[in-house]
Image 1 (tube, rainbow, N blue to C red):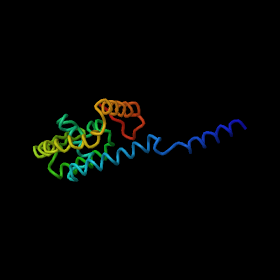
Image 2 (image 1 turned 90 degrees about the vertical axis):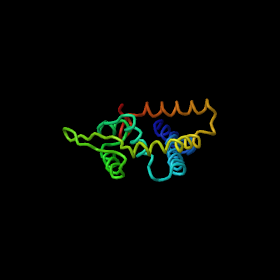
Image 3 (image 1 turned 30 degrees about the vertical axis):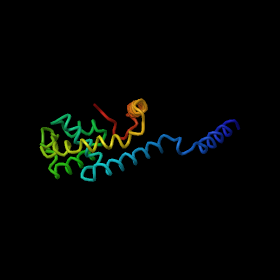
Image 4 (image 1 turned 135 degrees about the vertical axis):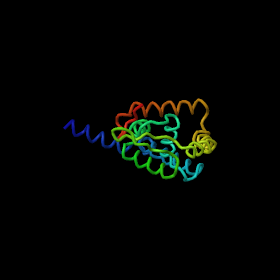
Length: 161
């Protein structure tokens, strides 16, 4: 009998948690907002994930596709699909290496695209975080980073650096 009461108590207290007090809901909404602001600010030429892939290649020219997937926290098949699309747009090159790996590099056109995106990325950052004070912004980013780090292994595609 005490177990049933405890279970009923848990069920009723869970049902009483406001949707806006549930981290998963808030994270989903934050992602929706972030993607929306990305497209509003930068257009639809590049997706947020393609941008992350290209920025990672800018910082790590010549890395292989598997390492890229690990650094961007994507599964390898999604990363391969994105790489094919980016190569088709002329923004990256993919060179076959030993053991079937592929070396990835930005092209001059890909570098130029990222350079053109800098002002828009700064606008996007301001649109997303501009209403926060400097200390709130620092705290928000620090806590978000900590949340992602401590929960990394729970991800479908954990980040590996």
